[in-house]
Length: 155
Image: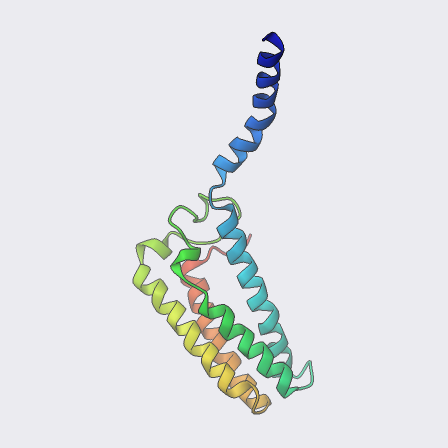
């Protein structure tokens, strides 16, 4: 019986730090998901941005694929990725500002603007480099407007 008590105490001692860590970061997974979404978005924007700047040769199939990826990624952007309490500085690794929750209508409008800009890029990316440039201007505006209002700048 004494051995069982010692083993139970040891197991509790070893597992408590892990449980405490999980309790401190209930939004860890959703924050990682939105970081991953933004990284994928940035990767595809970089492909198109390189073409728009002339740093990379325009390639219609590559531009079309990157635009389609951006549209797909922007279509999953939703308030579900931003549960209340997952804001900066409350949640570790979060850059989401509390304005997301205090101005939910504005945040939803920014998501809609992103989806509109992404659809425009899909329509224009495969046409020519000027289409990519026009699409980048709209996407940059949509991304920048949302980040300015709802994202803490990285320090």
